[in-house]
Image (cartoon, rainbow over all chains, first blue to last red; front, side, top):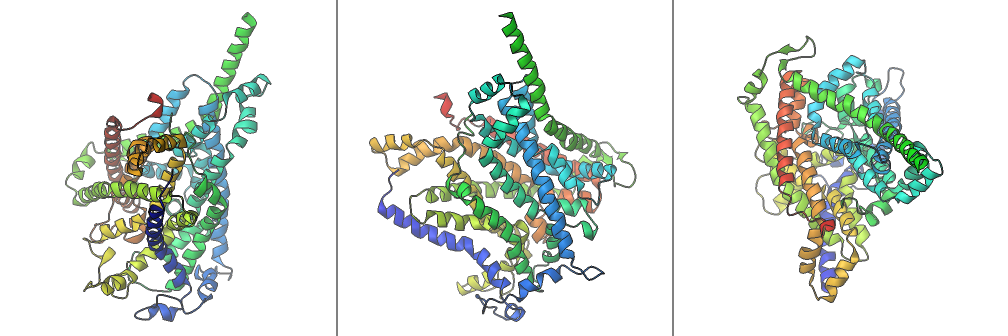
Length: 289
Length: 302
């Protein structure tokens, strides 16, 4: 598509304005993290920090509290989150790819009907399952453990993930599968050595999404976990940073520093995946069929 | 021939067993963690249940009570209202962003990253950021800008029932980067030859948009509309973090109301009844959208 110079200049100007606006909240977070408590309490408080004041960052570990023996709670929270990041993400990837493979590359009776039924569950709001799941997990004896958060992932994987991987796997030529089959490769062998490696870009995409979701999640832990030693990082941040009393300043710079740190992991995965995300994302005919 | 048939049959049997094995973890998961809860929820909605004593069957009482429950009716109203208001902005603006971002400029990747950046910040952090930006005193960030532009009194943002929902809407606009990437991905999927042909015919960009881009994007548009409605009707994360539904219930979305009724006040039967109203609402709207999809263009049909 050829675009005229005037059009490109106008677009550049418009996009610059939009970008600055979109960036402002993020800038504000970083700027306030570097401000001193005095700067934040001043009226009017400054737009720019007077310098790179790292004190607020240094106060982060202790702001999450100390255990009776004097060690930091923060490591517990991060430990729980790390465990979930692995247990849950791998569960999602394994179950969703295997299921998507079954739905796209194995021909069996009733396949399309099963898939349609699975798609229908997308309409069920999570609110409907919330209370019965709470009761169910309570009866399983899973309350106040991390199990309700990671165990179901090995039996789920998310319908939208399955849908996306299925569409992606559809583009793998059937002839490849058939020749492997003739060579004696069974259903699972074909999954493990052909379908899975060939779906790497999609798996990566879902990996990043799931990872980020778990990292920022506070809602699941809030419902199922009560003891402090089971808290995840997200829940701890929520309890420390978010209160619905809008006017309290508190130690805003430390809170903002926590927000900055919390954004670093998603930023990092975004930078790694940037090429996939920004330049090459396309559905590859995903929604045509 | 007979041997071949037999081989084909065992192959089919093998594939069927293998296929069901592949999907079995998810099927089991759906049965245990989705279907069972849905049925239980339906059962609970006809009971009084507080998680301490066993559920007590009370017939349609919960559903009858709903229609005189001001709190519930209000939250139902604002949920629908908010979904209707945000849908065109969410989809239209992100589509517009996508179109702009599809221009061939050298710095385009920088713009794309900057616009996407707010989406990278976790919800917890952005709730905090926006609470501060929305500070209702004259010292608040936005208020200082607005007052410099001539506003006389500080804008109350999240602290007044009339402005809280609007403030959340503004905050939501900063999440458009995700939608933008979605459209960019879609544009990438359009075969370039369409545009080459239209250039030969002397079509202008507006014609390109209406005769190529939009029709080709209509299946994605359809997908996005459905997913947006489903998502938006049950969304409540931001209000849980930022206002806890207040002030005076003005941001008490249905999902939040269900959560507080069921898992905070422990009126579980009543909360389940509410969640079924939400379910029915989503089902009706989705069916309605699916029935009216004659504007969606599928390339294969041609």
